[in-house]
Length: 410
Image 1 (spheres, one colour):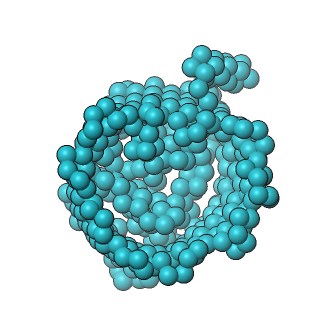
Image 2 (tube, helix red, strand yellow):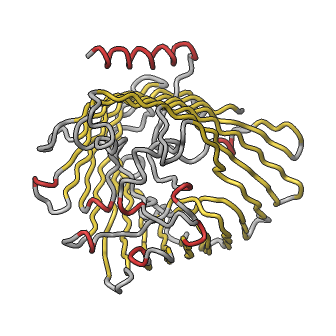
């Protein structure tokens, strides 16, 4: 109990001194492009600061449980600073760079970050005169709910836009060092190397991907999108696959109830077809901004053995604040509620559960309960109590999570 009290008041004191509320851990896309300072007519600069703390009683279900089995309570902290610059030398032409310096305590020897490290988040040249766009460099390719694709690649993409539809082609190479499939984009220890479908070759040029996305605009307010993805890690034949996804989304009751549905299929290296789906529903109990909000999510991949699960290295469904339930877990569900009844303050509760064989012996769950504090897009803080394996037969891990995010810009 003493450890919990010390951890809580340490984080609270840091936030109080800075006096900057902040939030949402799962909002990984950068806020910088829309909030940078214009220092010259053709040059913009900005930065983002993030601080992350995770303190937990070590039990079953934590990715670090095996590493820290002799520790009763673990403290983990990470700091990150992301500077960004964008240069517009000609109309339609942009050169932009985002980097990230990270410090972790404790660091570890075999995986990054080793205490302190530095990496590029984005480095692109983009030409966008209006009807089409061409982008080259280190960039993120994403699709729909990102259940298939939300990943950084060094590559090339091109998009063509019309009034009725958009079509985009992309290709690139990647490595696990560029993974952004985590609830907290800075924090890799709890989300990467210990989960099988994250495995790729450490040689970036061996992990090739190519694909096509298209969206149809003729049925607004509904959205219809489709994607084809070729995954080709040359050293890992079992992860070579063709993936397909069709997404349909829109309102059921305008302003009150909406849905997103992704139908997914993989054709694996043995030419076996592996289907799956992801569905999310969102509801709002009133027109006011302060109305309670509710979420329901369901996801399934079908097959009765590890060999037949969805195995693409770019499968990116990331439900759960810490445990990270994904399509690799077979059948996953979550329910959530939030109530922004006071300006800048939003209490929330999320509960996730998974079972591959729909039986109690492989059942795992996570409860996240806390507060989101925010002032616009610039200042955000999330604090949460996290219980892993709360209703499972396994021993429960109790944890405290806090993430501070400050966008330094306009």
